[in-house]
Amino acid sequence: MSAKTRNVWFITGAGRGMGADFARAVLTAGHALVATGRDSERVSKVLGQSHDLLTVKLDVTQGRDAEAAVQAAVERFGRIDVLVNNAASFYAGFFEELTPQQIERQLAASLIGPMNVTRAVLPVMRKQRSGHIISISSSAGLASGFDFVSAYAASKFGLEGWMESLQAEVAPFGIHTTIVNPGFFRTELLTEQSTDYAAPSIEDYAERREAQLEFWKSQNGKQSGDPARLARALITIAGQEPPPRRFIAGADAIATAEQKVADLKAQIEANRDLSTSLAFDEPSAVPKG
Image (cartoon, rainbow, N blue to C red; front, side, top):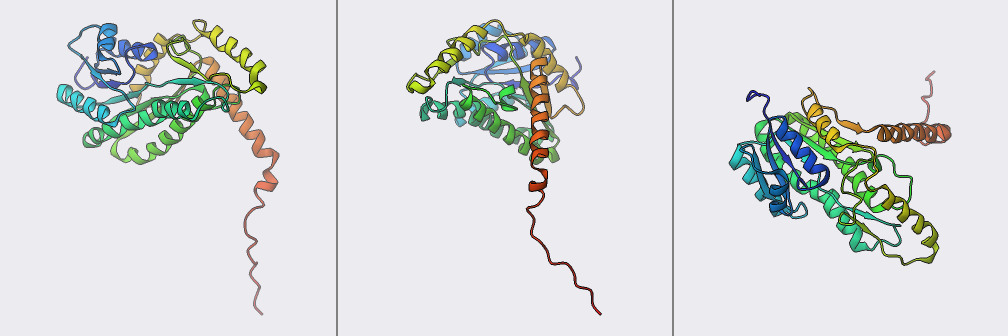
């Protein structure tokens, strides 16, 4: 791989799940990698040793961690070409049963965390006048008309709104942004170590809660998406000129997106006349004479 096509990638949450697959794909493709995680020893154990690899401790909820990790990346490789905001958490449960603290932790990891890391990386990319910021969202960041994911969906909807606005802000510096919306992929997200459930507290939800818990736990290990293939797809879209502003990942995610588009169109048409009747009635010009 030539120096012109060899990029420096920076991946959060690279020690487990989808992040580890992303990291392996980057190294296999011949790029340099800064692999970060809350436990840097775990990251090193998972990814092994390579001249092209730097492992760094990074808790994305801590701004100082992000600044230190970016500094270490620049000291080692001199630049950062692709940032992948992958680290996240999953707090599942009905909104009323999730505690304010659980919701705050969800937003801290999955929304504020990517902001912290991106804030630390942007000065490097602005100086380069180039870069690519990829944020891993979810189908739940596009459409979330189903139970049990209100906190998670709030974090992902927020991530997408921020990324869409950021795109306009950084494009003049030659920096691209991409939102990735994966469907169900066979990762560690639904394992007991990665999912935090709301504690039962409201009887009205009891029957539906039992069904939801049974569904989510039954999905672990049976998701149709192959994270290794998604990782290779990420390498592909990062090499496109220009890269896509959004990548819908998986046939199930495409179905969700298409249904969202159809629902939006239906809602627009249902009240088009009312929606377009809300302007001031400006006085018409009175002809002279």
